[in-house]
Image (cartoon, rainbow, N blue to C red; front, side):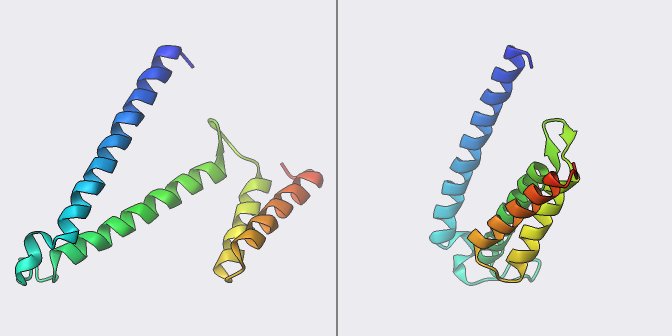
Length: 123
């Protein structure tokens, strides 16, 4: 990777991260204070309190971003797809968490599955 492209990408990432954090702090203060919907009137769409709706969408957005990053890290290694062993290991970890297994045990199960499959020659 070219040094200039790396530095421009890192700079853009830093600026975007700062702006997202600034927006979160700004919106957080507005939502905590009640915002424009504090008068008790519902929004024009009839969906209820707009600050509650905004909180719900912000929570959902955070979850979507985390899932997208996790899915990308689980399926790609650089610009190439990862082997089947990592994908199956992540799947075992997800199923373990879905079954309410403690987090540490779920991570260990995922690691053991990936390592076992790699020992068996499954890329």
